Structure formats: C-alpha cells, structure tokens
Image (cartoon, rainbow, N blue to C red; front, side, top):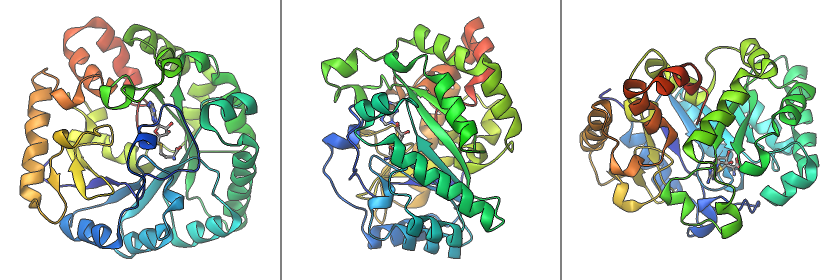
Length: 337
Ligand SMILES: C[S@@+](CC[C@H](N)C(=O)[O-])C[C@H]1O[C@@H](n2cnc3c(N)ncnc32)[C@H](O)[C@@H]1O
C-alpha cells in the first residue's frame, strides 16, 4: 500500500463527442504536456500498469501513441477507455504494434439513435472500427488487447443490456462489460442539465439495475468466458476483491490530471480534493495523503471527496448492512475498466 503501482493519466480533456453527463465538457479544453507526462513517469517509479484515460478522448492527444511507446519501453502495461470513434486503421496498426493490454469502449445503448442522442457520435462508425480492430488482432495472431465495453447506466437505458450483450457477442469482444450508474457525485452532477438530472438513479434503484445486469445469464456467460484478470482495473483490484474494505484506487492507484494535479482517483474533479502536484509534491507525501483517506474509509467513515461514489458506499455497506453483504459478490464489476 506504500507504492503507486497503478495510475490513470489524463491525456486530454478535449473530446469529439458531446455526452451530456461528461464533466470534461465543462473543463478547460487542454492536453497534458510531454514534460508533465515525463515528470509523471519519473515521479512514479513503481508503475506496473497505466490507464490513459480522463475526461476527454485520449486518441485526440497529438502524442498519444508516443506516450504508449514510452510506457511500453519501461515495461509498463497500458490500457485505455475510448469512445471508439478514432480507432482508425492507422491507429489500430500503431496500437497493435505497441502492445496494449485492454481497450474499453464506452456505450450506453446498442440502438444507433439512442447512442447518438446520448453521445453525439455514430455507433455505426464505432462498430466498424471495432470490427477492424478484432479482425486485425486475429490476423496478427495476437491475444491483446482484450476489448470490452464500459457501460454508463442512465434511467432511460436501464433495460438496454440485451442489445449491448448482443453487440458484444456479434463483435467477438473478450474484455468483459463493466458498469457504472450515472454518477451522482457532486463533481459530475453539478454540470448536468435538468434533462440529465432526470436520468440519475437513486442508490436503491442503481443497486436493483446492477443486480439485474449481473444476474442476467447472458452477462454471466460473457464474464465467465473472459480471462479472469485483464486490464488496469482487474489488476489494481486484486486485494480489494480478496476482501479489502476500502477501495481499489485508495489501495494502489493515483490519478494524474492533465495539468499535473494528483488525486486519489478519476472521480475527484475538484482541486480541493487533490493530493498534490507532479513535480512539486514528493511521492511519500502523495502516498501518505492517499493513506489518510484509505484509513478513514477502512473505519467505515466515507472521506468527503468520496461522497456519492459507489465504491465508497460498498465499502461502508459491506460492514453495516445485509444489502452490502449481498452486493459484495457483484461489486467487483462495478466502476472501472
Ligand atoms: C470520461 S470518459 C473518457 C473516455 C472516452 N472519451 C469515452 O467516451 O469513453 C470515461 C468513461 O467515463 C464515463 N462517464 C463519464 N461521465 C460519467 C458520468 N457522469 N457518470 C457515469 N459515467 C461517466 C464514460 O461513459 C466513459 O465510459
């Protein structure tokens, strides 16, 4: 717990999609500089796996592939989350050559009109890109990257799972499906327009939706068929799945914002919730600040920056409620990629 083995690094807040729930659309639109990226690698010498993801579309960063190559040169595994629209043939070639562990593509609905309405992009293009990625991976005889879906569940898409499972199977994906309910954390919700606020599920509703997703035999078969531990989140969450009463990000991770600010995870958007800054705050101080939050959550007391987070809620529920006990078996597929 005294090392930073897993970090999410935010390449950019710029995006070519317009998802109405994305906090990134309200942030300054800017890229991580190469100097900050290098300083991050220098500051975190124990990194094993980096997820290049933040509030924008990482493939828009002009040096995205160079970042991957620099990480791979240090033998650090790389995963990322993408909207899937920029996985062109050229991008796929560079990704397969560099060696990526996992790509999760975000989707809320397999219906093209609903997808476009929510994300402001074309599902058809994402599907074509994924078809090419999977075919080219096969042609090269590779087993990586595994490719899965990241699903954000809105009220209007609470029953969209069947279409998503069918598309997953049609595309021959193998990275599994991770879910997160539309965030109710203030850092996100304060940017929602009234029509997006209406899409929030309350905690009880969210648990019911998640339980329906995870008890569905099709998803159980999908999850049963995939390799047990692939990708950033799977690897970071090993201790947590074994019974840590905290949160996988507080156990091992850090999030580096595109301006070098550091927080415990990608769900903390407010600089007041930060742990420090790359190039300014020494690593032991960053880790000590993370440990303070971890110790607080381990006592069953949710740290203020974690208020509203499903992971924090599960950590506390595990101890104090029967529902928490029942959800324990489900929680490991909630949040993260
Ligand atoms: C911020 S996006 C960035 C990566 C990429 N541009 C994409 O669309 O996947 C990363 C993930 O966070 C999810 N996400 C963003 N805002 C959210 C919110 N308010 N509630 C729940 N999930 C959210 C997205 O759906 C996506 O799966």
